[in-house]
Length: 370
Image (cartoon, rainbow, N blue to C red; front, side, top):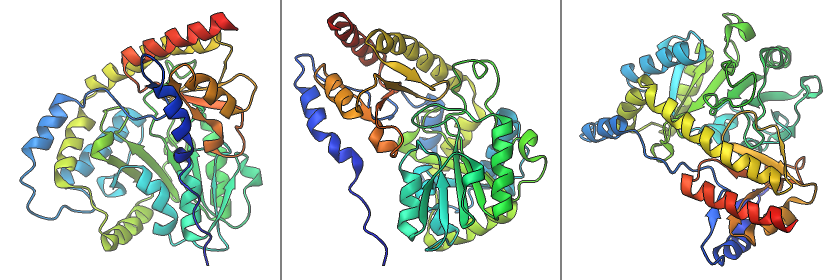
C-alpha cells in the first residue's frame, strides 16, 4: 500500500500571509511565481480565433504545432528534433508529477532529482510508490534509478548546469538504464556571467548528447517567457521512441491540449519579440530587488538565472518568512524545496513593477533598523 501524500506545503503559509495582509499599505506577495504581465496580444487573438473547437484535439498536437515546436528547438535551443519527436503537455507541472506513472514506474524503483528542488519531482515518485532520491552527484545515483530529473535553470535556486555537467548526468543515467529529463522552463532568463551573454545549454544540445537522443527528454513551458501560465501550454522533445511511448499512454489517459491553446502556442513559439520584452521586465525587477535584499542583510545564493532570488541571512527560513511578513512581504521558505535549504527563502520576480518597488522600499526600512 502506498504511503499517503503529505499536506500541500503552501497551506502552512496562511498565518504569514495573514500577518502580511495586516500591513497598513497591504501585502506584497513574492512567494509564488505566477506571471502578472499581459499575455501577448497576438497569442490572445489566435486563441479567440480558434474557439470553434468542435472536434477532439489530437493528443500529439496538430501538425502545425509540432512543426512550430521543432522549429523553436532548433532556433532557440540549438537542437534538431523531428516534429514526431515532440509532444505538447497540459502545462509542465502535470508532466513532472505524472512522468513516473507514464513510464510505468513503481515500488522498488527510484526517481532522482536535485537536492534543492521544486516538490513535484518527489510527489511524482510518491504517487507511484517509487523511492524519491534527492541527489545532485551522478556517482551517487542508486542502481535502481529509473528516472532522473535535472532542472536547469533551477527553481528555486537559479543554478545552471553547464555542458560538462549535463554530459556527465546523461552518461550516468544511460549507465543505469534510466530515462533522464531536463526541466528547462527558465532557459530564456540568464542574468549573471556567462549566462547573460551565452545561451543556457539544453540537455539535448549536440555538445551534450551528439545526435543520440535515446533515453533523454527536454521539458519546456511557455508560462513564464510568454505569460501563458493560465493557458497550460508546455511541451517535451527528445528520444522519438520514448515520445511515442508517452503519446500512447497519454492517448489512453485522455491527456490532450485544447485546440485553441494549440493555436495560441504556434503564435507564441514563432514570435521572439514578446520574449525579449518580458526578459527586460524581469531584468529590471531583479536589478531593484536584489540590492534591496542585500542591504537588508540577505546573501543571494546562486540565482544566476531563472525567475527567483534565493536568499538567506543565516537563520531558519521561517524566521525570515516572519520578518518579511511583519513588513507586508510574503516570501517562500526553503523548507518547501526539500531538506537541504532550511535557511533560505525564495522571492519571485513575477510580481508587478509597483510591487517590486514597494518590497524594495520596505526592505530598505528593514536595512535601516539593523
